[in-house]
Structure formats: C-alpha cells, structure tokens
Length: 295
Ligand SMILES: [Zn+2]
Image 1 (cartoon, rainbow, N blue to C red):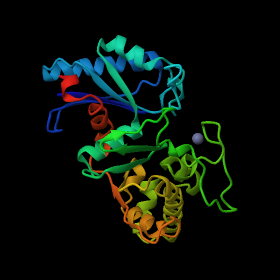
Image 2: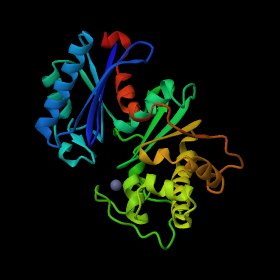
Image 3: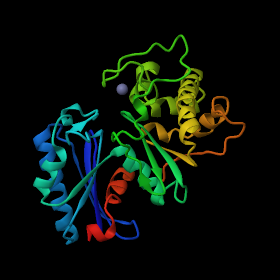
C-alpha cells in the first residue's frame, strides 16, 4: 500500500494505492488557501484515509506546485505563491509524523503516466500539464529527472519560440516576460482568446469559425513550444494533462504542426492524452516511495 497526496491550488486529494496500482481509498478537500490551515488539511486528510482503510501509513509522497530549493530547503516557484519561502517538507513531516517526499506536480503526472498510464513502456517521457499553469516533467526509465537545480522539466517558464510580431510578451506571475504559461496554459488561452478551453472546444465542434481559429492558434503555439523539447530531449512520448488536454482535436493538430519546426525529417514521437486524468498527481506521488519503503 502506498499513500500519495496531490496538493493542488484548489483541492487537496489523498489516495491509497495497492501493489497493482488500484486506488483503494481516496479523499479530497478544498485547499484552504493559507499555509497553516493547508498543512493541517494534509495531515487530517491522510489520517482520514488511514482510519477508513485500517492501514498504518509509513511514508507519504506529495505532489506540489513548484519545488524545494536545493540550497534552502524552502518552497519556491509555486503559483500558489503563499507556499513560497515556507519549510513545507519539515512542516508536513512534523504534522504527519511520517517521512515525506515532495515532488513537483508535473513530474508526478509524468511519472504516473510513465509507470502505468498513456506512456507505459516508453523509455523517455515528457509530461505536460496545461491547466491553471503550464508544467512539464521529464521521466527516464520510470525515474523523474529533477536536475541539479531541482528544475528539470520546468518548461512553462521558458519563452514562446518563433515568436511572431503580434505575440507581444506579457509579464508572468513569476516576474519573467513571455513565459509559455501565459500563452498555452488554460489560463493563458483564456487571456488571449477570451474563452476557456472547454467553451472553445464546444463552439468549434458546432462550427464556430472564430473558436476553431483560436484552437488552431493554440495548437500552433503548443507545437512551437514542444519542438524545442523534442530537439533537446527527443522523448518517445509526450503526454498531456490539465483542462486543455480534454480538447480532442488538439492532438492531431499539434502533431500536424510539429514537423515544420523540429530538426528532423520524420516525427516518430507519440503525442497523447493522459490515461489517469485527475488521478495522475496522486498516483505519481504514491510512486515516490518504493513498496518496501512505504510498507
Ligand atoms: Zn514564468
């Protein structure tokens, strides 16, 4: 049995997975949105899962926005900005009285999909979350690549490539100008199209020309952004999560536009939707400990 927690900006979810990767117990609560209450909420939620399952949990993996600084051990880079600068790992361990591992939520997503999801069996996997923010995660041989600075896969805060004259950079919440997050996340799409992804998808399917054009432009920006990843990492599979990943037309559209940008005469990369949906955060978090460590 392994316990994973997905610490999201709006909700916190905990799930207990058995050795076959089946979810035995799951619980979710709204994220209270302030630090002390959020630490308590995670501890209460895991205690609730323990009570309901009768399992005494030995270790907890937690998927978080952002990451821990390898120098200070404090949180940074979280779009739930009230987490930044806090000793989240120590506080969670103290509240739950158990060893905890924190891992970036996009890395957990990529790990979950690489272990037994849409990228199962693939050697090199790039996971992309296009939701409130824009996250990326690299998994090689079923291990997340955190990197020497702890920012492996933090693709959302690189600039939009092959920028056109009408693509004026805007300032991101992180302070940088022109980050991908402002263009291709769900929030970014709404910023420049005036629609949310689901609404645009519905309108496009009903034949609305403007919605179609907006989705086509979004796919073009996603393809340009991913071409750089393919040129550097050349992953076997790129797997999408987050609200924008539910737009079924995006996959063929992105694939169709990639070849014009990558440094290759052939595109063998699979570009796919996730298998585990909303559960990938919690599943990837559960995989952060081996069964031996978590038992
Ligand atoms: Zn940024």
